[in-house]
Length: 486
Image (cartoon, rainbow, N blue to C red; front, side, top):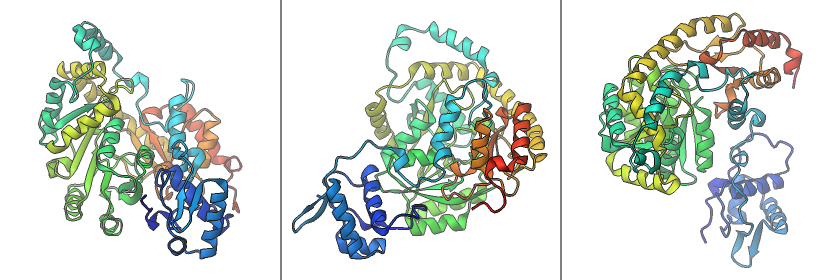
């Protein structure tokens, strides 16, 4: 049996649990490693001496913890050999992987509230366009066209790589952003999320370190925890990751991947500068770092900003795209552009996990791209978002809610709340008023954005939103932020 590295048991990685004894802390650490699959049934635990050193506790504390866990049947002692995991692993729960910070308004909570909210609820915290912004007439036309397709299109599984003509179109679209990729280097997927999942399956092993921006898209955290990765945040600036902190993280943590948005970053709306992009790629090459560039907001930009995949030529960068944000959340179609030697491996993983693709959704996207209707719609969408940005900024600023930057494109505003207001408290109070907000700490690995909210400007046009915010911001008793609060 394999033993487990002591680094899995280092203290100081998670805040909270202040009332626990040292013995209880050791027991919790072991249980969490079993729940997250870092310790499997039959795995050998570190020796009493080594665990005591790594957790900075006495050997008697570890002996006490191991004895209690053995009494519970979680582990078992083998004479002359040590302690081993005896309990079968419980079903993986993302709530048990990683710190339980802001649990009631964590990333999965926000997604759940936004996805299950009825039409009567306002959703300025969600990450998609309102239904009445979507091209329903164009979608219906494309659906009618698909309905007249041959029986193979309507009934067969799609090819593993995905529809060839759509991959050709995507390669030409990539060229417009200076990304040199052939159709054979593109794999179609069911969504951007599935693309990221397949990439993680290909490139990560449990315990690998992944860098993310802080703040970043909250589902990066959940997805990486599901893959049992160790996540390290790098502060994000208006022009990209903080380069000094980025380099320090590479040296200190030796990460396998860096997962990021390069354009209209979620949640800040910031855009990577050419200077920062070149420096990130130089550091990646020096340190053997692979980069996953999630570019699902690309079509919100009129003129393409710098893409890491364009500068790198897909040597160290995997590029991901999707149509869910612009076209429809019900039309799930994404893609991966990667270096040639990874394509067959990604296809194998796609077959193993989904067997085929959503061929009808893929056909629908292809027909809209081919006839030019998608391009015309996106042009009007950009204009509408640009016209919406100013009024939303003005109304938020009138309440003392200040944008971190004013993005050049996209639908997100990253906003600081008035002094003393906690975003999680505000989100809880707003939910009672049938409004779903996105508090800053769900995007922040370091939990340093407690005074920020992300607003979706396309979902922020209702007068009721601002009336409720104004009332809640004046009613600090409701938010539990009276002076002197502990």
